[in-house]
Image (cartoon, rainbow, N blue to C red; front, side, top):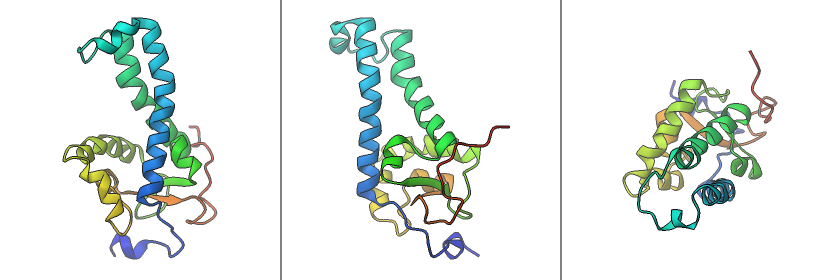
Length: 161
């Protein structure tokens, strides 16, 4: 049985425009935190310096913080703040369950695959019948509207072990 036939009839996929705006909001939220801290650390010269990494604080704020931000929200609530605002939740594409740790990792790394060919992997969300980007396909996840997969589709935090 393929995953399409396993999809409950109640699933409503989150579409391209909602996901795009959610992503823009997430990035804006990160910028509101990153830019002031980076400028406070390095001063206005930071903006004119062509170096990709200007020091350990820059590395942490520019590269590590976004990874931690996204993965922490995914693991805790199955969505970033932007997706939560639109009622989206990331689930396993076959079962509708909370994705496994390997799926979170593959999904995040899949962002780079989706971005490389001029963002085609993200644009694919608008083309695909299940609204999956390439990162979703690689990780075997879908983004659906919360509440459309039944009573388990709440945004409660992940269970603590």
